[in-house]
Structures are given as C-alpha cells and as structure tokens.
Image (cartoon, rainbow, N blue to C red; front, top):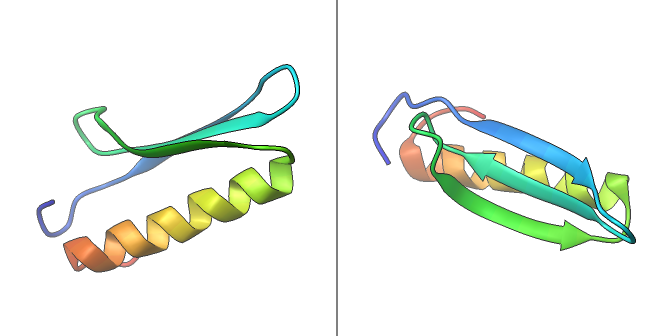
Length: 60
C-alpha cells in the first residue's frame, strides 16, 4: 500500500452475524470477516484500520 492512502469500511447485518470489510482507495477489499455482534465487528474494523494504516505509514 502506498503512503497517504485512504481507507473505507462497511458493516452489514447478516442472518446471525455481522459482516465487515475494509477497502482501499480503489475499492479493493483489504480485509473482511464475519462476527456474531456489531461491537465485535466494529472492533475488528478498528483493528484492521489501525494495522493497515501502520503498514502504509499513515494514521488510521
């Protein structure tokens, strides 16, 4: 990933879980998952934004 890139995320409720995804500027999924609660899914998103931002040298 290049320095200074922007990231986006999405959360959506499925039958019995919450799906989450993190996307780069080109709309490419850089991480995703499925967890039982909205809080758990949001925590996963925040972790991935932080981790991906650190890898790219940007603050998430």
